[in-house]
Structure formats: structure tokens, C-alpha cells
Length: 340
Image (cartoon, rainbow, N blue to C red; front, side):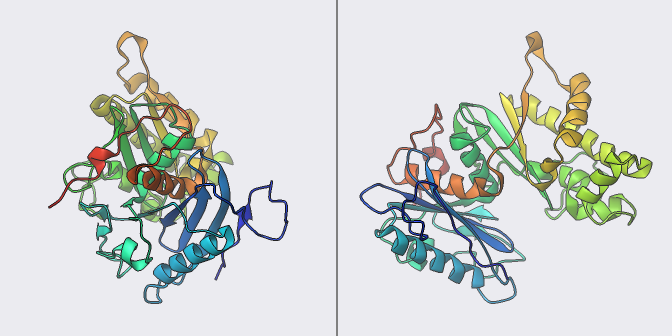
């Protein structure tokens, strides 16, 4: 099992793995995934002091929760003071009060309903949000979505995640379901995805279906891309069909939400030009461009720590702080629905 390996800021004068202490405010951002926890410490001005990626045993009861608590304790000990803000992102639908994940069936047993403020035994509330929502907030603060008031994000990996900022506000919906763009249906007669949506974008390009789509020839989407780049005709057919489906979906999202930009991240996005060049070629004849206006298609910039950065940003803003970088003006008040 991979243990947490901390990467500290280069200006650390001690060289002994100690984080800077003192009176500077800092936030801890936590992103819980299926097999690992990613953690960052960052100031309200967006300066990252340390990052860690800690794996856990999914089969061990709530091992992920124990690892998170240990990491938070370790950070605060190294900093010499409690964190001013702590935020967490995780798969599933966040509760109406933003203190827990309300719905996450099938995995991470014990996550549903776990109140993170109580679990971590901290005084200031720990706000919780969906992992894809957090990734977009991270990119909006410090990454590719910075400065946009209308932007959507797609994460292409095992499945397809998504989130949207509309008129400067994170789109949540009635129960936190908004932004699940991977569950858009492209084929009403296609096989259902994990949400029951027939022929969804996730079915069309998610790594979860690549063996079926390639008739067992390829194990992963990255295998398909590598073979496509080497001139394998079957791989090219499978890959370009997937990219064309993605273009059709992106075209629809543009028509529905009218974003300034579409940010694309996740493991499959690491294909670079093998993804973005044909995607743009397919989009050119599809996209409605009144007056020549076109949405930007941009790769995500923050990589695997986007969710942790977004969780930290959410915590800073939720508890009355101010994230200071850039022109971002996302209003998080509508995200936290009032209850009681």
C-alpha cells in the first residue's frame, strides 16, 4: 500500500519535512477517491504548501476515514496550529446542509451520513461537496476555468463526471444531482449506465465500457489510444467513435448551458492532441456559433489535486474567508441550501 508522501514548498528553510508555522491562515483540502485520499494545504491567496496522496484499503472497514483523520492530525502538528479551514470532497451527492455525503451506494461503506465536522472533532464546520463539483471549483480558483462566469467541466476516466458554473454560481439542483453530465443519453436504445441512463456519454467513452466497445481487444482506453497512434485501424475506429460521441455531447451542453469554456480533465484527457484535435474537428460542423462565437475547449490544469483544491476553496468561502486569486466570483451561497 502506498503511504502518504508529502511534497513541501521549496522555500522550506529547514529541509526536514517541516511546514512553515506562524500566524498565516491556511486551509486543508481533502479529496476522497475510490482507493486513495489526496490532501493539500493552501493559503487563502492560493499558495500551496504541501500535497499528499495516501492510498487506503477499500476492503478494510472505514480505513479511508481513519487515513483522513491521521493526515489532518499530521498536518496540524507540522504546522504548529489548527487549520483555519477544512473542506472535503467525495463521490456521491452532498447533503442539503453540506455536512456529509447523503447518497453514495455500492462503495465506501460508512460514508453516507458521516458528519465530518464531528468525526474530525474540529470547531469550525467542515463543508462537504461532490468530487466533480469540487474539481471544477478548484479549476475555477487556480486552474483552467479561472476568470470564467459560465463554464462546464467533464472528467473522463473510469466513468464520466461533470459540473457546471452558470452565471457565476455552481449549479447544484434540488438534490445535488446537477452537473452529472456523463449520464446524458446519446442513444435511447443503448445499454444503461450505472445511473440507469440508456446509451449515455459514460457508456460511449468511459473506461468502464472499453472492453465491450472494443469487443475484448483492449483492456483500457489508454491502450486503445496507444494502438490508435501506432496506426491500428480497429483502435482508431473505436477511439474516434468515442470522441465523436463526446463532441455530440459537448455540442448539446453548449446549447443548453451556453458556457464560455468547456474544461476537460481526467485520465483519458492525458491523451492530449489525440483527444483534443479530433474533438475540435468533430465539433466544428456541429457547434451552433451565432455571430461566430465559439466555446473554448480547454484541458484541465490542476491534475489529480483539483478536487482537494476545490474542497479547500469551498471551505474558505463557506466559513467566511476570501479566496484571493484571480477574478473568480463564484457564489457558493446558493450551493448550501438552507434547512430547518
